[in-house]
Image (cartoon, rainbow, N blue to C red; front, side, top):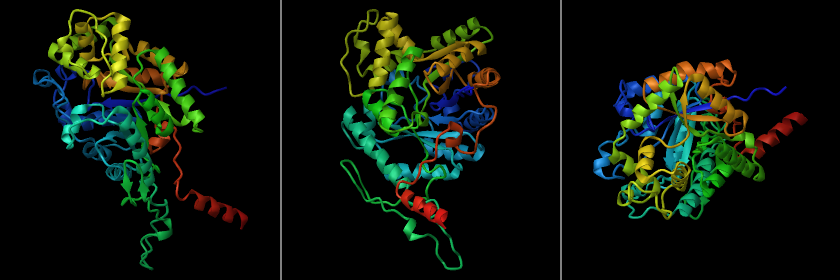
Length: 454
């Protein structure tokens, strides 16, 4: 008899909320994204609930919308993820720590070094969310006038991942002998110099950090375009999806895992976790009232700006009370654009209505009682729409606490979610294998054969 599959749950902390008005909700912490005491408390709460990971998204530009809208945004200031997560590593013991780092506006050596360090500091709980950066305004913060094209960004990302993983494998796991008597700190035979030369990068190496505890920190990816799905199939171990319906989730699940199989990768070595916005109530009507109140706190300036960013066009020039006109593709996220277009067509929304929805949150939302939310999650898991979810809380602290104290116990009662961690590392808890060192595998296998023969 097959065991019941187990949900994997991440917490999407952006740095603490996706909904534009989360910081205005009654009883909330409006300063939460820049208050370490609050963030520490959230991480420890997630760990008590046995969440797989705390995920901190990142953005590299502030001036990406008119000031009239920008003044209403709580995400204009937040901690750098790779400064915050090492601090949270000290305050937690099992919770995974995943951060975004851009392949467009960073360098492979920097990313490899930072995440290897985080993995050691956290005893094996680091994860890297590989992003190509969709916001064109980021270019101006890095000495560029123009944002690289979508295809070019993904070509660079593919090579970037190869360089980073190559740097993580600079040292064999047993390279550091630290023989005090002989005065030998490391074995030179167990050091690999990468000497990478490619279209985008020239990186000598080796990395000046020992091989990470997990071999490689867990590699996460979030794109759903064709290029994004292919990058995920080739490199990712977790995908943060953006599918809004179970049918869409099933198609994405089948597509990406099918690509993996054709590439010779085990589909079980990838966990697909769609973003899921949750609002919990004692009754369904109470939950819907909470959602309605939250949505009502979105100012129209924010709503119009959010829609403009998603579509890559200034929608304030459109007839706001008419349907969305045909809009050509831009150089921003193709996934976000397609999701918005599908929502507008499916619900026949005017531009104003669409903006108001998007100004809050327009993706997958589970709004109801703990039992209703657990029912939906169970359906997604058992019907192969996902391996779990990247949970987005309606507000903090109440929305987070509601999910942890009411939904998690219901999932555990159904034996769909753990009651304790499987191990100390993020890989163990996600059910992912530790990768072999690509440069020292042959030597390890040769040593094993020699030992067996003697």
